[in-house]
Amino acid sequence: MMKKIVTNVRLWVLVVFLILSLIAINPSLDASGVAIRQVDKNSSAAVAGIQSPDPTGTPVSRERVVEVNGIPIESVAQYYDATEGHGANESIVVTTNKNTYVLTTQAITSFDNETNETTVLGIEPLGLSVYEAPKSNIKLGLDLSGGTRVVLQPEERIAKTDLELVIENIKQRLNVYGLSDIIVRSAKDLSGDDFIIVEIAGVEKEEVQKLLASQGKFEAHVGNTTVFRGGNDITYVCRSAECSGIDRNAGCGQTAGGYACRFSFEIQLSPDAAQRQADATQNLQIVDDGSGAYLSEPLDLYLDDELVDTLQIAADLKGRAVTSILISGSGFGVSQRAAVEDAIKGMRQLQTVMITGSLPVKLQIVKSDGISPVLGSEFVKNAVLLGALSILAVAMTLVIRYRKLVLSIPTIIAMLSEVTIILGFAATVGWNMDLAAIAAIIIAIGSGVDDQILIIDETIGKRARSGKSWREKVKAAFFVIFAAYFTLAAAMLPLFFAGAGLLRGFALTTLVGVTAGVLITRPAFAQLIEILLKKE
Image 1 (cartoon, rainbow, N blue to C red):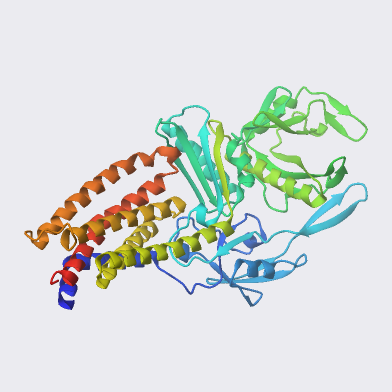
Image 2 (image 1 turned 90 degrees about the horizontal axis):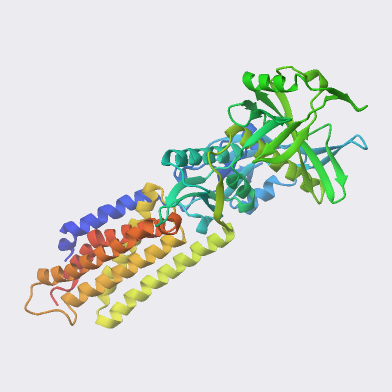
């Protein structure tokens, strides 16, 4: 018997695919520390030299934080406990599995014009987002890892080239904004309408909804003249602490509803844009209100045709082609710290739009989902537990039905093999495993169980015909198996386009699972049944 097992070609095909799948999955159960998900631009972590991971890289290859100030880190909670509670200008030594970095904490300050005092509101975050270290190369979708999914639709039909331009612009916006672990792809529904699906791991949806939905058309007007726009007219936008942040002169102050803080940052205009501004101010009057001399028309800043701020133009800029401009705006909150955070968030959005320019078409949010990382981890645990119980229940049911304990061996081997091959395929192509994919795995396993029962019935069960050879019995079973396979494949193909492409993962995983089953695991199952039970 052992000789037949070792020399059987179909069993060796199964073994080869299992080995390749395990290599692709690369299980690393002893991975220590927490993995780096994202490094904010211009943060302490970025200044220290830590880089955001390559989103196309494998999960287990990501840099992991293993120690903070000599304290071993084994969970996300331990990491934040070790990095919080520090004062300004303190050094934090972060050791990863690749390098050691020294991060310096930075204070969040606010200047009060009334008292001429600078207040320390808190400490800037280190700018390092982490998550539990991956144990394999299987990428978990947002349903299982947590994050935000936004489905966008152009307000009008656009050409394929324009859609590709929109996608590239969205990717650039998110990268400039400081987000990583991003998937941006196009999709169509059954009616042919275009959609853009954006998935961002570890980010709350409120943080990115406005950035994604806005066309991002930034314009600066002097009177009725547009003097510069975001994109090509702006050659440089400062985002470092030296020339951007809370305005040291204006600072923060109390309002009727709470607090207001003003931000400012420097930009550089192209020579053509600077000349347009000079021409627009050449004939303006100079007005002196006692606090300073300004031109009679201000510089109005518009974002998506809405006025976001009005800046007075100093009298000495009249008719001058100045390339360096100071942009400012305000943030509001019920507390001073909330106002500072709102101002910084608004500044980052305005900077992003100025750098990337406007989209060629307006987008509307069709659907937006936010999933908690804690909820996602519970899904994973429950899915693994229920999967194991289901496999065990199926094996025991077959044993009880056919009164042969040996049937449990090929049954369990076949079901575990199908799951392994599906996960290996997902790890190889970088496909995200989400709840839809798990549902597809269940369907593939269920289809496999049906086929296994059919093979058993045709060979040793009540359907078995004594006048046929074993090969003929197996051939009859596989005739039905392939007919069911092609029917299922035909049913899955429309799902690639249904629901704006959100069911594509379900369709692909189902097809991969049943294809691997029909071509690899079920022929091997039939061979094991023959070797173990043919003599009976």
